[in-house]
Image (cartoon, rainbow, N blue to C red; front, top):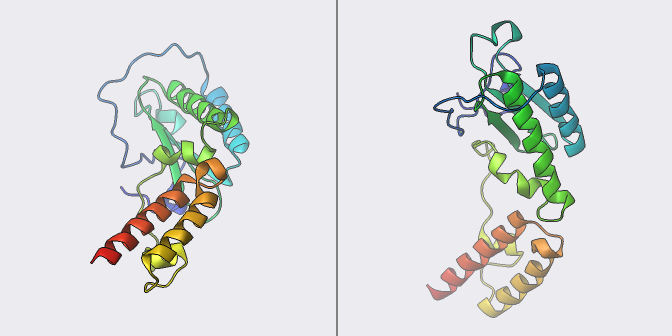
Length: 194
């Protein structure tokens, strides 16, 4: 099933992300955690991340020994924002898969703490593949650059340079902003040639 909104995610039964392949075989782990301890650690990590809502999804406890040990944590950083998910079914029991998720969240948070990425950059790989919201269309290159489509290329290039200085991740911008600007200037250059 493809999950398109946070409202579709349930704690029980397991909501597995369509974009993550299931483990072909499960292995024992060296983790020594209870289900309650692992669940509490995932919840602490979500609070540390500043997530506004999250759901830990898995098979019901009364069926966990004889059913799917996979676990998934679904969350949103802000209401109406993209839905993120991490899932694990590598290990034989739920508590170890859930503990692996807690450790992953902890270490992803370290990316921001150590200055290598922001949390949002670190979780880009965790984003579920969702369709764009209804009525949302991609911006045209001139809208992204804040110019008119009939401006001369030299003026567009100057505007791009000004915007890029602010949008670059090293200057406090984001990877997404910079990627949008780069794509827009490429389109502008192609339009100028044709």
